[in-house]
Amino acid sequence: MRLVLHIGAHGTDRGQVAAWIAQNRAALEAEGIAAPPPRLFLARISEALDLQRDADPLTREEALLRGLGATGQRRRMVVSAPGLLGSVADVLAPDGFYTRDVARRLYGLRTLFPRTGLSFLLAVRKASGVIPAILPDDAGAVETLVPLLTDDTLPWSRLAGTIRRQTPGASLLAWRHEDLPQVWPGVLAEIVGNRAPLPPAGLLDFAAAGLGAEARLRLTRYLASAEAPPASAGQLRQVAGVFARRYGAAPDPDPAAGLPAWARVRLQELDAGYATEWGDLAGIEGVRVLMPG
Image (cartoon, rainbow, N blue to C red; front, side, top):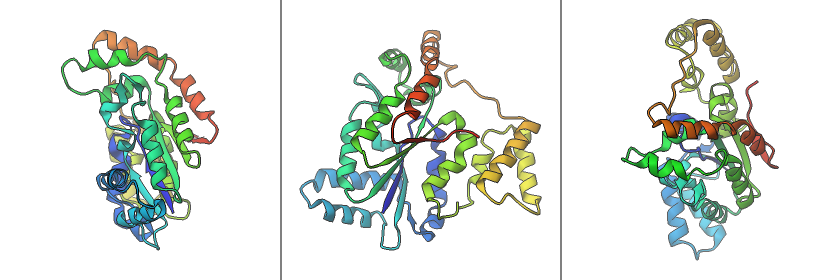
């Protein structure tokens, strides 16, 4: 059994991966891939940790997998559940960025699945994108939470290192949120595995995500009338790239535009080290990365 966990991070992809899995649940299950709803998965995980902690580990694992839909014919399970690493409120905390309870949660996950192979999928994002996306709307949240970011950049490599240490037998695939329009075929292929085809529903949403209005419209019309549509997700991405270059990409909004000037300056300072931080993460032993190409 292989358990593939898309753990976010919070503030990346706007739920697109989770929506694709949910949209294609029936098609995935027909290919032998269990795709339990994230809320059900998190609830069963919590229940097993809290109420079944003294049970035999292998018996508990078998019951947990069965309760989540993994039968003898389904040897793969996929879930998009950033809540595995904590709530959004836990990301920015006095303990640090993605520090509160992360190690404990990962250790608990490892104990629940002693025989199951684990795969983690992680997107990272620069500070000026991810922080505005996860800040609560509460008055004073900016003044309270942004000063907690005391590093020179967001410590994504520290998070990846924690995942590797706490689940040493697991695989970890990472990519930059900004690269998703180019690397999404690799992300989805990792979810379903090499032997299963990608269910088609929702693939156009990935391909057209970075297109301007005219490019998106023309791409949709082209695909609807094409005698030989793209034969793979990679070809679909390439076709979408042609329409983006010819008819225009979507404008890139500034998520931090509504923040006070001092907060924007602080996030820009953190952004300055983003490329170096990504290089540090990519250099961690056992971490695979997706790059545009």
